[in-house]
Length: 519
Image 1 (cartoon, rainbow, N blue to C red):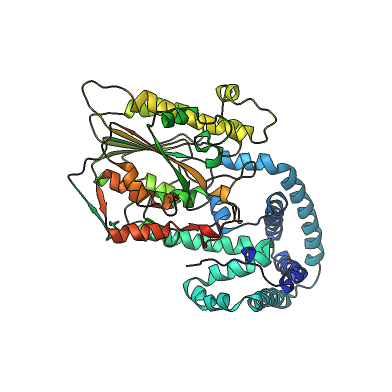
Image 2: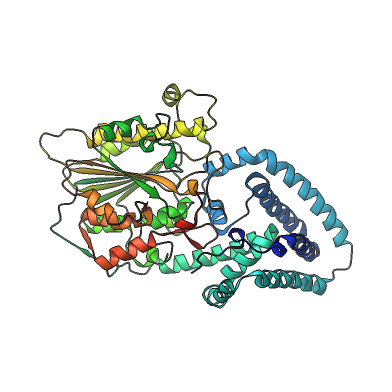
């Protein structure tokens, strides 16, 4: 477990900042030594040189565009991302990335030609790389305070790779970050796949209460990159959520100050739809997830996604979705509004059903996530967040369409009760994105809305048990959904969940306290 320390977030002494030239020199020596090694690989050397140029260019693009670097979370997202999002990112930052790739490739190619014609000095290059890492690690260790040094043996025991990645990657970002991140990711996914076949169980603090009066139909609508502070429901000064506002005025919904447990989708939904927490992600593999819980509670389960299908063996979300009785993936090819008629055809008020609906929501690029109807409502062209605000308005229309065509549909023969949960996977730093290694609360602030219909369950009472200082961390959503479906959570389990809600899991693979984020 890695809590509360990252060199990027700490205020070291003045000597730390003065040593930045040392780290830059060490990074250059390591790269040149590595380039010398690959330059003497027969036949395929040029391929490795071009790969090195691409890696360095990616790091440089992140540094220029975002003052950020490649992290474990970002690397995982790149590997698991869909083609639509990847092409969008390339289009947005091609103006920075393409010139960097060209210049870096030329420089490295010229260096490669020069080094190839010289004596290899293989042993010297290896020693230079080892010395560079050693000097860097030693200097960082000397700059740690006593409390940080005491954590080192425990971190080395748990995961030496994570420890060295956290220490060296920050100081030697070029090549080192990608190297460590790729190895750690492969290690993580290997462990993930080996655990898949094991039977899943309920946590000890949870049991099923067979006589509960659970809703007949549950809709779990998961937004994408949706920032709470840009909802008029939460006080934003533009009418971005007129439908939700109307339900609020009619006292027909509840909404909460919520935060996501992570700033990228794979981690955020993995934690929200399982008993995994920022402090312990193992329950995602050991315990039953939200879909499996619904199946056991007698619900017919559906996973309707406007995002790409990723196999159960390839991602956390793919694993959770694989438990649904029926799943549909539309690979960003549909408007989110088009999902509702599909759900309407599957809806049957005579049986218990649960729908997990994953929108494309407000993800970059924003202009592709709204239509003319949203433009007619939000017309202030001088607003720098206008495109983003229109995506929020579009998601509000999706919820409205779901409610008016399905949830609020009168059936004189069947008295059906329904419950709609709406929340986003994570927040957004508008016009920049999410998943950045900084303490920006906008990456985590999300809407959390509950809309009951003919429902006799006191959902507010359930949710209130998991609030900490008036804030709900959606890492506890699986507990809330479990109670709604008829599961009983012990007092010990509730207290554990509340403690877990104090933390978030960041893209560097570490856990931090929400209270440490400066708003």
